[in-house]
Image 1 (cartoon, rainbow, N blue to C red):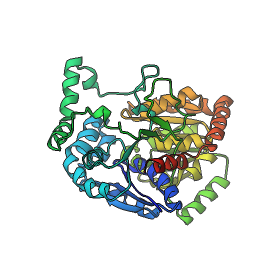
Image 2: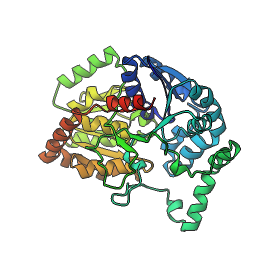
Image 3: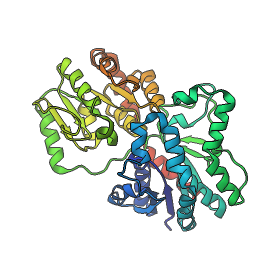
Image 4: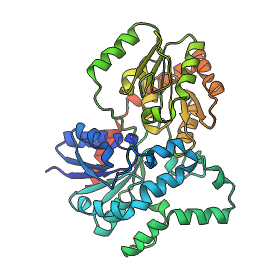
Length: 408
């Protein structure tokens, strides 16, 4: 008899796609899968063939107050925007939404930000399993992840910093107290009897020897929505018309923060005599002047374009990083200064498959000059091909699904 599995996740599409990948494997095995997330992702979930549910209110989507938009425009405020405005300030609403959903499923699979669902599962005594999407979430003394904190936080003393984090987490503590649950620091919110699934590849980040014993690495869980047929034909025509282009994207944030990034990347391509392919918006939206060696796509599955690139210049979120590494071409990982980007970019650099930079300045001339090195030194392409071959031997979604069924 099939199981009923609930995934609860908050954030961008990059926080939804891995669970769609796993959910589709589970559904193919006869199990019923629901993904509870923000309403803005309903189309992506339903289009994948899985059931959708609302995890918490999402009435700021598309407005200037949307924390998921503001975090890219105001990265210095990222910690408060993501932890408080997106998650903790909506704790009661997310808990209430999760109660009915958690009660009606055999197992709940938690994204790190799904704290309301964690409380619901704990209060109801229902089984859950935790997941993380990138290695930055795992503590290590042997190989500390690279984190970039806001300047104001860096300048605080240890006591002041501890008080800041206590204030930030106040809604979590208050909600646990109201529910009669024991005290638990937010850093232990992922801990549970069924462990933590790390949804990335051991070829990208191996256990340094001191990760928690409860962590099980599955491999990357990659998923992309369906591509538009006409756009695929336009892509094929452009790729066939000349040598491999420089491919650039900032994903869903391309039109939000990319109007100085894309012109600079296009200029770097021209200096190198490369054609340029931009994913994330029209030429006008990205601030680009149309020309014969330029193609712009508002959206395109990365797996259709990345393998055909001379090099990739893209943001270092874990989903895009996984697709870039699977493509087997040199990669310039451009990290915004918060969450997992800086650590992912560092790992790309350490693997020798590309370069990693943290986007702290508006003048991108020097960072983008590194593309010449990526293309000019064959060792980057060779290491990228070897890593892609290793990743091709993994099936993270199937491995994660198997472990989930063991716990259901």
